[in-house]
Amino acid sequence: MWGYSAIGTGLAIAPGPLVVPVLAVASGPVVRRLGAGRTAAAGCLLCAGGLVRWAVALGAAPHCAAAFLPGMLVTGVSVGFALPTFVGAAATALHRAGSPPGPRSRPWPGRRDPSSEWP
Image 1: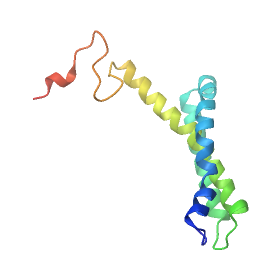
Image 2 (image 1 turned 45 degrees about the horizontal axis):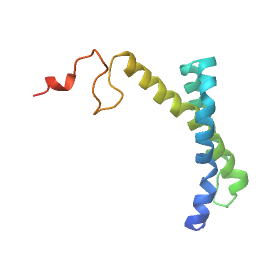
Image 3 (image 1 turned 180 degrees about the vertical axis):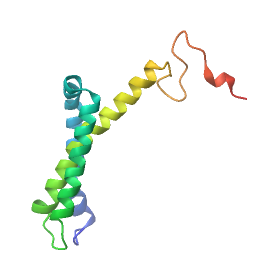
């Protein structure tokens, strides 16, 4: 990236992923307030905004703080809101359908084991 070393590139990219776990935890109250659909949609729109920011601001000249970092932070925020919301919604739907929590788990109590039907 712009002639940066591997360590320099990693440090330039790090702020976006570092935002994700903080916002993943903070997204719970947002999901309860707005709902999973709206929270996930907001995360997706933020991701699009971050990508547009990169498309407009990035060039051949190395301007990490002014051009790259804002888009990285916005996309980090978007992942922090959207990804946990998608995973939570999918896990909730599986639970409601009676599926076990993992692919190798035993079924929920009182449910039959669908894997016993395979040849």
